[in-house]
Image (cartoon, rainbow, N blue to C red; front, side, top):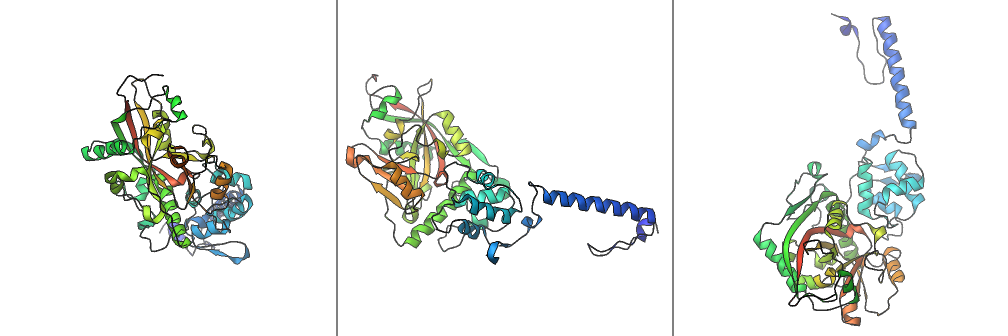
Amino acid sequence: MGAEGSICHKEVGSDHEVSDGKKKKKKDKKEKKQKKSKKDRSDSSDSEDPWAQHRTSVEVSGGVQLNSLLEAFELCDPERSGYVRDHSRFAEVAMRLTGLRDSADSFWRQLDRDGNGAVSFPEFVEWAQMNRVALPIGLTGGTGDVGPGGVAFPSTWQGPRDPRVAVGWNQRTMVTDGKLFAELQQMLDLTYKKVWTRDRKATGNNQVPDGYQLVRAMHSENFSDWNRYYLKRHRLVQDCANGGWLQQYQPLTAQASGICARHTLRAEACNEWLLFHGTNSHAAEAICRGDFTMHLSGSATGTLYGKGTYFAESITKADEYAKADAEDNCCALVCRVAGGQVLYNDEVEPSGEAMQDMVLKDGLYHSIIGDREKCRGTFKEYVVFDADQVYVEYILVYKRKYAAVPTS
């Protein structure tokens, strides 16, 4: 038998008996180097905590055991507002979950990716997954909203359904199905209103179109955005159920029954709607690829109801913010929006900051409906302050129709 056969193997951590003294010396030197390398990695600020690969619970200060990401999130949100805001509290929990050592501000920059100053549960889950925290998500409840692995795909999903494959899925595909195309055109027709507001001036002419003709449509699928939207919607369903009541609001788009049924909206459970967001083709693609950015909210639409993202139930209202291209084609997004508990307002001059605080700080509401149709005879506006409450389903490219030549 050769030299290899003279080694007596024991359990990991025991001594190794080697017949050759030179080999033993060489092996000891190698093991010493490996131990030093391991120690250097554990002392480094960007090291990975080995137990993050397999741990089923985490112990934090006071002997508290965290068995899921939901429990960790709730520890960071003791007021149960639905958002984490305390940088120091999060940093303490984050260090225990990841084994990393960093400043509270550095941890927060990783966490608050949409820049709205308040971190939702989906953002927290995404941060944990990026840092290889292997705790289960922890979604429970008899809502029927939880699929295998914690997140279920929508019935319209055409991409890969294995989460391990779908992680990087982010695609736009042209709508070629005639029935779906007709449903989207019907959505434009049924939500059209011959109503003018001063925001119409931004389109380059003051005349309200007489209708809208769909030119083409693209269906958007973004796994990361869907994952976050799904988790947020699940939390809103639970919050609305725990509250014991839910005032339901039905937008004008609900009249387009075909497209709404296709997407099996959870309107009764959490005020889930399909709404429009007017934009341009470049911004539409950027939003589909990377989600709405809350720190830019209000830059195009104003802040009458706070610094949120604004949506319309009427294509005419959304069209006021659409920019025509060289071929006179305009662009709007059709988005799922989870409204949850709605703060309704029909005041002529509302306090946007106060209402925003009622959503973000007090946690009493999840969204705002500003009823300008009632107080001004124009349009309702729908506002959310969390990008995770929005998921883009379609990019619509359309033309404005005029019975007469528009005048500026």
